Every structure is written in structure tokens, then in C-alpha cells.
Image 1 (cartoon, helix red, strand yellow):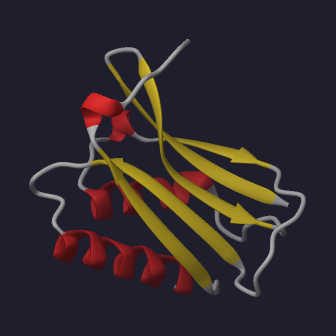
Image 2 (cartoon, one colour):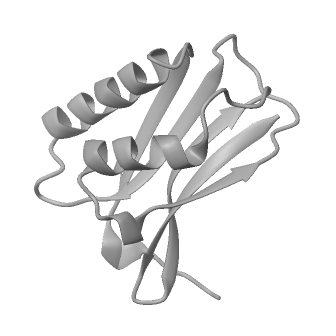
Length: 115
């Protein structure tokens, strides 16, 4: 069982951006996924960190459940987010996975972090 977690590192804060949950080991490495996901979400390399973590149980019939949490920005319109979700789906389909995907945009002023 695996989940891949992408963290956003900026100004010392650690903010989860993208989590991929799977009950089976992925057939593609985090290093292979990283550049494509950077391009899809239009973020630089140093903004995304990929971690692989175990997932012991999950409901649903999809191969992967993807949970994305990103900062709300004017350029992240519904249309842009919908296209990014479709691109993420296509990326994982190209590796043979069916997915469910969820995106949550948060208001940066409401973000709190404790390290």
C-alpha cells in the first residue's frame, strides 16, 4: 500500500499539495511523475516534494485516490483546475491506473503551520 504526498515548501512552511493513495505499489516512480505534475500545476521544481507513504485500507473501486490541496490564486480558475485534473487523470491513465480525484483550493490567509 502506498500514498505519494507532494509538499509545497516556501518560506519555511510545509503545505501538502497532492496526495496519491494506493493499496498497491505504484508501477511508476515518484521521480518519473514529478516533472509531469510540475508542468500540469505550473509550479517550479523546488515547490514540489514527492514522498511515498503506506496506505493500509481504502474504500472505493479506483486504483488510486488523488487528493489535491493548493493555494487559491486568481489564475487557478475553475476552468484551469478542471483542465489540470483532466491532465492528472490522463497522466495516471497512461500508466494504467483508474483514479478518483479531488481538489481543494484554500485561502492563504487562513493557512496555519506549526513546525
